[in-house]
Length: 488
Ligand code: SF4
Image (cartoon, rainbow, N blue to C red; front, side, top):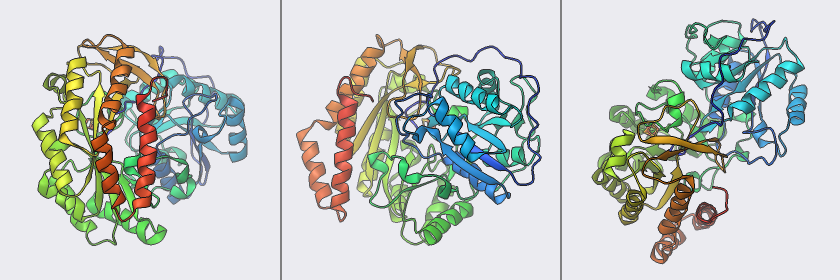
């Protein structure tokens, strides 16, 4: 589950009037639609994004099924994103309508960059409709329009349904003004298989724990999350929704039989919330050709028998969002995990033959340096294969719980977010958070017995060459995460 938090840098400004002569929306029978992903800022140096634009690929597939011609441009991939580069890609695409992705899966863009991009697009051709898209809740759509005052509206709700409605000229799903009435929900669209052919999938990175020797394709079996963690990007998206099992199986079957996919990553913020649904899905997957997959899971959603079913259905890796083993921090964050539950889940996954990654946060309310250090020591003893540690970053609109405040902006580092660092009362300043985070990486990874055991296991794996390559990549990442002066 997402444990690196999204964000932005400036608080939303006051509601601004729509520009006079807003564009006429939609009403085309077959439209060229540019789905434009802005970078975090329109200036080099650009960092290549880590996460493939899953919501964009879904919107593109739905638009194509509806008879339109979607074009996907991720300006974040451009070696030198700039206003001139933006002009050039738009001139080349020559679209009838433009959807600017306000956010995407595990990706949020600085509000001022979205505003700058939209203003430039509208200045270039005022009559061409430009709206914001993503999987936006109504509140987030309102906040987004207060920032990007030149936009003709924002699409609310499930991205593929609102995109098809917008391009087809239906008002449902489109919020036109920040303080305008909530739009009606668009007619639902069966989630299509994302249009990965329109996305340069190989340009995106996966964390070492998600990568396999063969190409990995993200699949969403559910969207959102029913849990309330304040830092999580899913707070900005719609409600939790899981897909019918048959629909997920059909997508997997198509990916495997049509595209030869052998490895997927369930990109659900938290996979397997409902045990009955999960069991049904896993049983269905047993009837498919062999598939390797990994997922992000809450430790309290799984147990030994379920994890053995994961393994039997092709799972090789689970990432547990642990966050903290300090009971006070767990209480303050509303996460509700205990050390006993986490320890049991790690042991059960390892016993089932799965690789385990534990993810923890530094700076939670209720925590302090001693509590964070104790969490890391406990995790070391629980023996996950890998661990990751993040400071908490949130966008400007996000409400913080008692005992937490904002400690200023932080560039997105190697992650696809910008945001404001959350500093809780138990910590001195953001420099202390960074020092603790780097210490945690060193404490976890610089253990000769751990490194020796890992190498021993991976060298005996059937795909030893790939495993060594993963370890080398992961080692570089851990070094960057732990050394002072290196971008996280
Ligand atoms: S449990 Fe849900 S809300 Fe909490 S971090 Fe995980 S995905 Fe996000």
